[in-house]
Each structure stands twice: as structure tokens, then as C-alpha cells.
Amino acid sequence: MTVAVYLPLDDKTQWWVDMLQSLLPGWSVEAMNAVTDPAAVEYAVVWRPRTGDMARFPNLKAIVSIGAGIDHVLSDEQLPAGVPIIRTVGDDLTQRMREYVALHVLRHHRDMPRQLRAQNESDWHAIVVPVAPQRTVGVMGLGNLGAAAARTLADLGFATRGWSKSAKTIEGVTTFAGPDQFDAFLSGCEILVNLLPMTSQTSGILNADLFGKLAKDACIINCARGGHLVDDDLLAALESGTIKQATLDVFHVEPLPADHAFWRNPAITVTPHVASQIDAGTGGRIIAANLETFESTGTCADLADAVRGY
Image 1 (tube, rainbow, N blue to C red):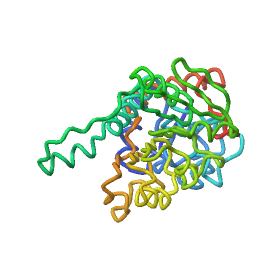
Image 2: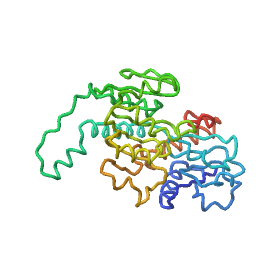
Image 3: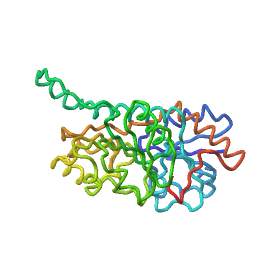
Image 4: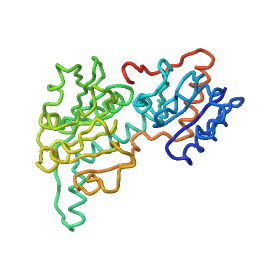
């Protein structure tokens, strides 16, 4: 079996090629750009492939996304129809997201940006905030990552609520579902975490209309996809005071261009898509196991639903 690997950076591609080759003895793992016989390629392991990459391989059995989302694969207008897409998920990725969400919810809850400004000004002034049970935190998207993040926040004591497309039950979390309950979910939210899948229905969901439905001085944390956020609406909401602070891990263009306004806005914390960053060691083992299972059975537990988009 031949596996073609592609990531936007050549050094990272080779990193993954070497890791997967060590985990798949008897298989041939190649960088996609080095493939000389496209007909031999049966699997593609990719992150943000280029338009037409998958169409090169006439005998493709499955595509593996290096990450939990598959939107970056589906965005290829020349994607061959009917080829299964396998997500990469696992305990390590979930743990990383739990840590990231807890860290930044606590940062906003305890108003650390203001505390750091006070330090820079040598200002010995106590910043008193409510205790966690008096702070309402909402999580949009209750899949594997969102549900785990919501449970973590509930365990920390926050008044935690969650919203998803279909009804979910999570201990300690007040859940809402569907468009009819969306406004009720948003009302009173002081910190909003976005972990929705990227679909045509969720594109641009973090917009001026949504911001206006949150509690006064609400904070936004986006660690799903850059396409969920309307950038100009967030900048305007920060300027007007509708939104107090934001933490952004994902962007329309990555790396975030050096001249983007987000870099210079003191109310925005920028992180470089690391909330649930997968490393080759962990991801390689998950991907290798999924490939071997798919090759022997024609399916695997992490198979995505391309129609739903996740």
C-alpha cells in the first residue's frame, strides 16, 4: 500500500513521512510532491491539501485528515466524489483542547489582561471578580472536543451551558439544541467558546448579531475555525465595548498575516493554531492504526460524514 502525505510546509511533511513509515512496515509512505506513480497511491494523509491534489490519484481508497476537522479537505472543488475521509482524534488531542479552553476561560474570568496591564504600570490594585459558579460560560459545539471542554469547565465550577445542532446530555452542563434554542443559549453568556465544526451553516456565525445577544462585556474564544468569525465584526464590537476581550487560535489565513489588525489589538490574544495541535508521534500512531484498520475492514471508528461536514 502506498500513502501520500501533504502538509503546507515541506519540513513538516517529511517529519510525518518518516514517522508514518516507521509505524507502517511493509507500506510505502511518500511525500505527495515526490510521488512519481499516482496510480499506486491508495491513501492520502493531508492537512490543507491544494485544489486538485486528491484528483491526481485514481485508485484512492481513503483520505486522512491530520486533525479532527475535515473542512480543509472538503474545500477542494476537485475532490473525488465518494472517497471516505478519516478524522484524526484521540485522548491526547482532547486533553490538549481541555487545557487550552480551561486556560483561556480562566484568563478571561480572572481578567488577566487587565492584571498584566496593572503590572506594567506598577499598579498595586486588587482586581476582584465573581467566583466561577457566578460566571456563565457557553460552549458552542458539543462533539468530542466540545463536550470534553464543557465538562472541564463545569468541573471548575462555572455555570456551564452548551449548544449543538442536535440534543446532547452532559453531566453538570445545561444543554441547548437547534436554532430555536440558540438565542436562549447566548443570552447571559459572559464567556463564549466556539468549538463548532466548520460547515456552510456555521460559517460566519461569530458575527455582530451574535455578539449583541451576549452579556455585556462578554469575551470570545475561537478555537474551531477562522471561517466561523467575521473579523471586522469582532474589531467593531471590541471598539464599541460590546465585546471586552477575545482569544483567537484560528484564522481565515494561516499563518496570520503580519499586517493583520488582530496582532496589534490589545484586547485580542493571538495563538498560532495550537489549541489541540497534533504532534507526529501521537498523530502518527492514531493515523497508522486507522489506516491498518481501514485496509483490513473497509472502515474505522473515526470515519467522518462528508455530507454533514464532520
